[in-house]
Image (cartoon, rainbow, N blue to C red; front, side, top):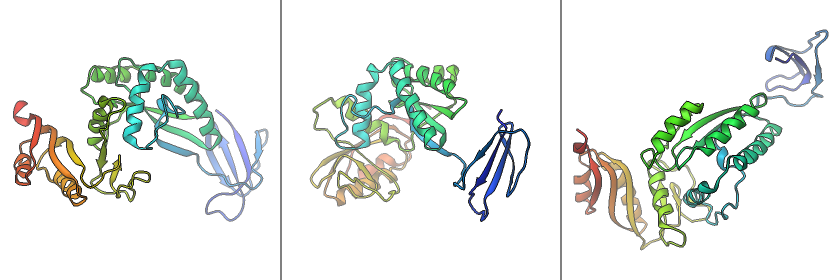
Amino acid sequence: MTDLLVKNCLLLQKKAPQDILIKEGVIKDIASKITVDSIPTIDADFHFVTPPFVDSHFHMDATLSYGLPRVNKSGTLLEGIRLWGELKPNLTADAIKERALKFCKWAIARGTLAIRSHVDVSGQNLVGVEALLDVREQMKDFIDIQLVAFPQDGLFRANCLDNLKAALDMGVDVVGGLELGAVPLTGIAIAKAGIGSNLRGFIMRKEPKGRGGRKTGNPPGIEGSTIQSGDRVLILEDVTTTGGSALKAVERLQDMGCSVIACISIVDREEGGKEAFEAAGIPLHALTTLSDYV
């Protein structure tokens, strides 16, 4: 590990310049004047010194892929998911590593020394996992990289569950999921619609984050394609319990002038959701129910 003395540092909440003593890679002392013999010394020349930045949410397997296979013209998450689905079958380990290593060097140069990156484990292979494990090993002395196994297309599609388990066995650190169940459902529907389809997709947050569509004109909390009065809308939901959250979304869409024709749910927990939808005049179509499992 490195022994180092950094002199004349400006630190937050310290009025006078400080020296920082590092022994075996660990900060041992911070004081206005530190004198140590026979140790490498750097003069910070009264520049501000701070802990490194941390990027806690990244997708390094897709980094620097702007324009591949084409530009995301709408700038929306859902079009981005569709483009990633088109690009993924053509990815190679060498291409992923080249872009990821370039990004890591940029990050280090700008003060980021820790990154938590998702890596897609859905698809026919684990080329992204293999590539980023190699990048993590190559860069371990310079930047901390934590890899998150991320089933982009849904955990129970194709061989995704087996891929996730294999990725963990290969050395991926943790497993990551989505806050919003509607994201993969809507993304898959749009991706399967094919190039040139007029099908549009959006997601609605339970609590708006203060932003809508900067390019789409949607109000805060509605992200994705532009939603307009007169649109016919199908609601997708992963799990239906009482139906309360989905019906709030329905009410909001109806206030915007949209016509909600139905709701499709993966699982109906049979706790009043179907009845609530029927009372609102909207059919609920569940692919499975809790009774199918218990």
